Length: 170
Image 1 (tube, rainbow, N blue to C red):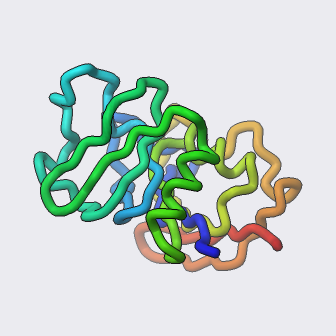
Image 2 (cartoon, rainbow, N blue to C red):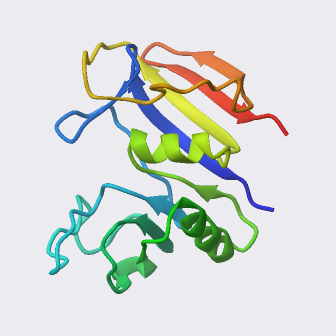
């Protein structure tokens, strides 16, 4: 079965993820992802994201939303599917589309916390930047990661960030 992975999610030293007006170079991966927060609920699809008409995903992307809407096909083979029935449904759809490959999860802290609390994340790479944001959305707020079955399996310090990999014990 495919694994659910979070790759290079950046947080500050004080545990906050970058907000809409901040940048910690938090990239999202390619196809088969569950995304959140890149689309503002509109009825016209006029907000396309920073990428314009050709997103970098080149495959299916599953967007968690409270607003039902038809799928949106864009250049380069990216198709955004809007999922309104929860994180498990989004993950199931992404796994089916991934056809045995790993699925990458992108989005903000609230979305990632939902998947971590449900014990659905298999591996998470966090880049901790040596800056203090002082406020924002705390990634691990009110979470007991060891109780949820997560442990640090890799730690690599570098000049500009500390890289931590959390894995779910099986």
